[in-house]
Image 1 (cartoon, helix red, strand yellow):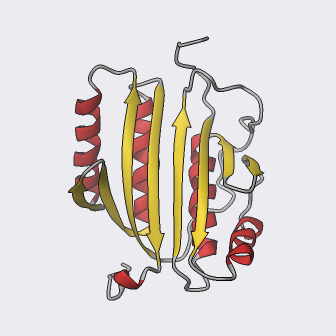
Image 2 (tube, helix red, strand yellow):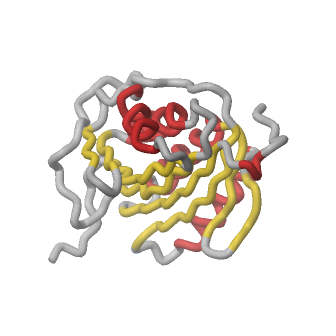
Amino acid sequence: MNNQCGTSPIVGFRFTLSPMTSDFVSVIKGALNETDLQNVWRHTDDVSTVIRGRSEHVFDVAKAVLSHATKTGAHVSMSGTFSVGCPGDTTGDNLLDVTSELANGKVATQYVSSQFALYPLGDAEYMDIIYEEIDFAKARGVFNESMHYASGIHGDIEPVFSFYEATFDRVRAKTSHVVMTVTISVNSPSHEGQNNA
């Protein structure tokens, strides 16, 4: 087995979208159909969806899917894993030779609360890297709270996703195999009164 971290620039994101409504099928399918997927490779099965491609397009699509899913006002959560440099990854199923122009771009203002965990795999200084990114979140104004096994990130969907993309790319510049898990909650009843600005 190849235990060496890969050098492929392919970024992947496998996620599960969970609308808290009996009409969840139409919310999930509608969000995927409304999102421009031309710059990523995508496969959906009975559990999750995976998208693969260049970092900027993967984060662009992830943000757009979540935004479209929340339009009905239903409480929606997205849980997933971003990954780059996995030794077991393949060069297939990707779109790398595409324009750098984003297909979806900015989305409507929307408060999101989320949690993330960062794994700079194979790096002996991994804790220093993680602490640097927590400080980066604080500097960006999106840090919410410390907690067991994760860090809380919240705010408007644009700066939150901008932070996630930036921190993922910052870490991959230092560590060849990076995994980042995220769980994002939108339109939760517990968010009532939150500032969307």
